[in-house]
Image (cartoon, rainbow, N blue to C red; front, top):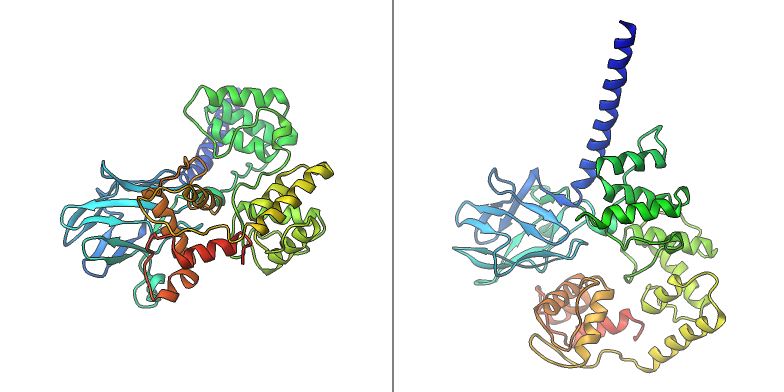
Amino acid sequence: MRSNLNKKIIFTGGLFIIAILIFSFSVFASTTDGTIDSMYKYAWGENIGWINFGCDNCNVHITDSGLTGYAWSENYGWINLNPSTSGIKNDGNGNLSGYAWAEGLGWIDFSGVTINSNGEFLGYAVILKDNSKISLNCINTNSCNTSDFKIKTDWRPKNTRSVPSLIAGTSAQTQVSNLISMGNYQYAYQVMKEFPHLFTQKDWDLINEKLGKTNQTTTTTIPTKLSEIAKYQFNNNLQIGMQGHSVIELQKRLKEEGLYNGPITGYFGPLTEAAVKSYQKKYGIKPTGIVGPITRDRLNSSQNQTSSTITNIKNQSENQKTQCPYFTKSLRLGMNDEEVEKVQQFLINQGFLSQDFKKSSLFDKATEDAVKKFQTKYHNEILKPWGLSSPTGYWYTTTKKQANKLIGCE
């Protein structure tokens, strides 16, 4: 009798642990395939009224690549978020682009919309036929005290996601073993990446093999050797006001250099900016306080970097100074020019175009959408001088000026 009771307790306990594991990671998985919050699901169109993104049959999903499903307008009916000829795209970090379609409204441009680290939609979508705006968040018009509406999701931008926490009392090795046995190779990989010193080359070979035989992918390149994950790689520019995992890694690196004495917050504030300037001065880089291509090259180089490599970086910095202004030509949709590729590389570095975007001399729609996002982010510097409230997508005077400023060409 006691033996049967013990077996039941062990069996029940095992099910409980597995349930915790599944629950923990299903919650984490929602950050990559999000739905709409049941409370915060309404947007407001200045000419069309309320739009419901979370109705019973809307079935809206937000992933790293885009939005699917429908929104419902009481006055104009269904709005298709993923029509076959366009659709709302996501660059993975919450910068939206592309178009939705409604039979009674036509095309709706989402290129001015972003999703922040809390899953809140910000900015305006624009109905092209009359240029009227759809506000995705009451904060846009400072009306939250009287009308608290917003669209919110449990999806989170790639650069703000955290690795799942270990379950109390369970070692990283045990948790990885459990996850692999359950087929959750993606999350097993993420735990391994968080605690690389606990795993052998054989462990990495196994997870590479498992992931290679499935459709599961990671948000970063899977290392084939332990040495490949020794240092975090900075792939995008960083500057004051930004936040996320990249900023955490930056602050750690600056602290290692003895240049940053503040707390590791993940927010790029004045203390971090001052430390970046000190870092740039230390290595002969123009002290802009912005982590641009040259500073990223230095951060990504090994600590045992040779003096000749450092000299090359210094020379790059000097060469860049002599090439200022870097952006000189006025460009717009449909134009072909060799400088377009320079613009596209800048937009990739700034996070407005994806890392796998194929650069060319053609100023295409994707480039225009990225320029609009850039203009929206720096509204005061680019649009306000002209009295504009909406981005144009034109790579003209103030847009070029702000881009030159960001890469150190004042």
